[in-house]
Image 1 (spheres, rainbow, N blue to C red):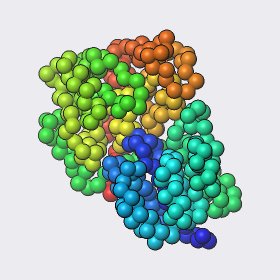
Image 2: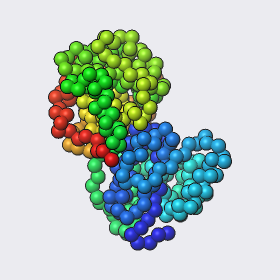
Image 3: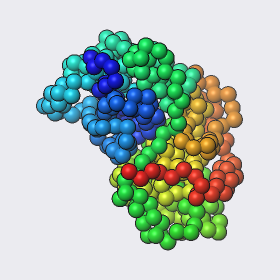
Length: 366
């Protein structure tokens, strides 16, 4: 193990986009607290654009559970050459944990969430994430603090801000190019993203269409409906009820190109989904529509900000009978999101559109 001021740490977050965004503060904390440390990251291949401009990270690795054995063995060999002192798994995956132990990393941190984690993580932390209790970002920060505490011998008490996504110079230019292309340089740009990718309940497509149409009718307001992949079905359902003034961007962009598109917005409206967190981390005001179940509630999964603007989240006003996960169609209140009215979403949207975009946080160019 490296002793003193230098330490080489690998952090991993190999699941979904929003989860990775909410891990960024915990990654940045390590470098902020110990600037001489070498912090590297391992993510799923499709999420690389989220971290490729993060200045606290020196190298990006990718891993997926279904990769061929030969590729895994090659990766093991390359990781061994790095001689990492510690690894922090913000999301525990048994296959990945087995590989990291094979690499020979002596200090392995992560949540003790499965029985295998008690065997494969020798610096595991008991975190009952499925029961909620605190925000996902706080769970991640807790793990980073464990590394800092172990190294210094004293509890680390530093404060941290919300996640920030940084754009390259090319992406920065693409922000204005998007507005120029759609002739909305002087208009308020609203993105409505109706799909949750299966991570939460969906608000009805007709409701999203009504919000889009009403906002598009406002003077100086341009509305876009976005979506890709498995959100295609709900976007198509919204599309059927849209006014001609609303533009649909379905499967138009890969992630790297979608980030500057989001950064061009003045408001993002959507359910609990990765793009909601991405928009917030890019400095765009957000309006989230969340179920009340503990594992879906904004207290657990709401977007966080790097500035003083508090994200707006709408949650059904009822006592959810679920102790953890949503009961779905078995619940007496299903679908409780129907209790969130179009009028309430429009009211919050209009208020958020009054924010001066020249004073809000803008994504930093790298």
